[in-house]
Length: 293
Image 1 (cartoon, rainbow, N blue to C red):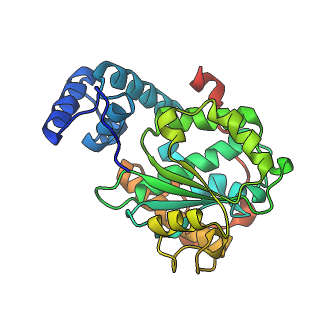
Image 2: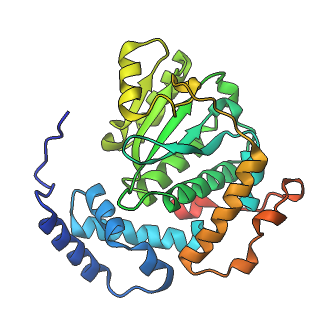
């Protein structure tokens, strides 16, 4: 219930603020996108991910800034990844968990693409979108992963999974609050054992397996979600419906907010009322092989 602090964790906000200031001094002057990205809250997440070791946090955030300058996640727009989202395999929920965290809903059985770069770019876009929509003071999100209908045929290649894990752990540290894996088949447990090998132990602790008609699972879910908001697929009372056109309009509206947040020119992105999935052509994505090396 209560986490025991290790020797590297800090006891009070004053100590944390001092570490943040140390990290700022170590990083040096910033400008543009890097300055916006390196907020105090962001620096705290990197410090937390590295047990408040300033030098390790500095190295980690510098690698992220290098990745962001190359991959440019803040410049990905919905019209570039909409084809990956047609089935609703990953979407942002209309509700939050009890902690006020944005919720991403994932349905692996609805996988519709064999493109490693396409899958990664789509997920990175939705991570950035979820972060954009976090309430003030909240730095984390929750994931609901529904394995209904999943089979190995719908599974993404292990190489893609490894790249996703690398990006999540190294460039989005402490962004995951909890991940609920609902009704995973036994076959997936073998897959997860392989994936878990690449997970940081702290991240692995946030992954919870939950099952239908299971008292412990029901109690866990209701402790984190309001039943009336939680979709039936996850043991709740709400109806989960994914409308790609509606979701596309919502994402296109958020793209304008994203452009404003990062100080980018809005005119280079389609407006919501001009969005059309019919004319979407997949665009080439930056190779992650060089990024992860």
